[in-house]
Length: 197
Image (cartoon, rainbow, N blue to C red; front, side):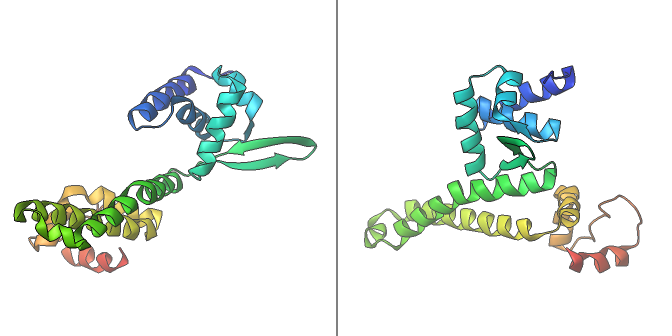
């Protein structure tokens, strides 16, 4: 498959960003290619398009499957495995957040809870105990928040993200948050829509 200049730029940049996020460059490039192409591709086609070894593609696909970002599909009359990813950016966002939370946040919270519940923890200086408890509290709240956000519909999640920092006015009670779409100035309309979130 011949990439367009736009596709090539997208795939290359996604690979560079993947490296910064701690993800193998080829893994990121394969995912970017499947996303940009929007159709299933077999391993040989991925290998040829990206100019990487077939073994590298196989290992990268296994990693993407482990992250639930790629699934296998088949074509009638073709015995090869084809691979596809979701073309829904919200589904991908949810998958990445869920997987990172399960792999990074949840184990850290478990260790922090073990530390705090250990009898030896009381022997630590009070200020050190406070810092560790504060860290555990913050991470627990972030994990709970992530779980709650993952349960929202894409439309509602989009509105929450669009509110951004203006949500602080609502939390403090200063004023109703602005309409996420930037429409209407009726405060009652804003309040009426909040329970939907």
